[in-house]
Length: 447
Ligand code: PLP
Image (cartoon, rainbow, N blue to C red; front, top):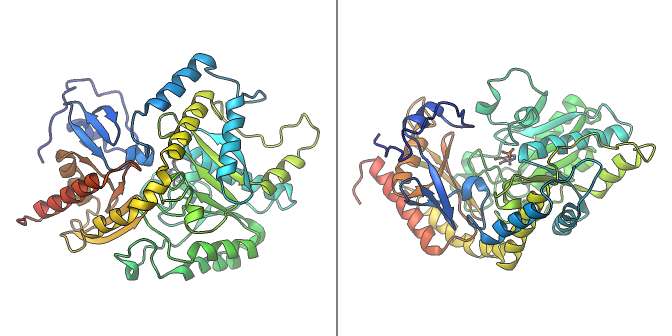
């Protein structure tokens, strides 16, 4: 494969061990980003690359928004850091109020983290703390879902369900996994697929196996992103909610990708009309500019844990991070939420998603395309690869697309799109055309 050598070479590249990256391949053909503007990344030759994944599902409002830059600079010059434990600062309270008002139903308490992984740990620790303070300390098991992604911490790789991310480490937390909902009968469904809500009933078997007295929570992404955009079947999440209620199990939605507009609603919970007990967010919260995550929980979880805190000087939940609610991250989040609201970006995604849907599904019948899935401004394609090498062709296609000026994510046997909320129709057209050309070229077909 021919690849453009990095203009930064021979920059020493010995020291950096890159995350979730094929280090040897990367260092043999570096892909260096030197700038970004709007819907585009800029590489080290000054080339503009359409950002088909909004960074890593992070920068829906487009890159380098001056409003965020200014808010961050101003905050840095005012209060660079405030101790996160036992001291407060206004912006953290203000942002929490704002998030509580945005979240559905009585999800109105906010705990800040720095990432989605930390949010996954935090939410599941809160679930256990809740049951312990309810006098049910054996309720500790966390149930995830096959192909689910909840980050790279020990928690995330325990109840996360992507095999490749779990296999290297030996024992982590013992967890169970519901089946994923990627069903052959739903192949090429547009939006929410019709069949498979009954898969939620697997929770009944897990309750029979472990007894509900040992299960703390179920954690799922309303739409699995990292595994290649797996949209749950109609009724699946509602059934899961019903079963969790019946068996006194908390339901956590990991909305690190779906939170703040990706599905065309503020939260995936809104899209599927299900109120979970906790919602995890990160990524789009600050438009990717500063690391930040949060767990949004229902009132009763907070009340139970905090009311059982004992003497007023006792710390009720012995948990937190040095940078929880960091003032600069709060400033970035406030500015990002301002942009979402002022530019009505969530409504924009809802309005344009049928156009995007039509575009991605126009690739049906193209070489190597075994399935296409979509919701809002997210899409996943299952790619027919080489025998025994499921990840190879997605990688090759992504590299070809990069040569054409389009960043598309490859992961497992899939290609993934998470276009910026600010994407124009003409940019959707250009992306789909580039994908079509790339698939045909790879198959040796003529236009
Ligand atoms: N949860 C979901 C659904 C994610 O997609 C991700 C990251 O992609 C995470 C959690 C982990 O977030 P982070 O990488 O910020 O720890």
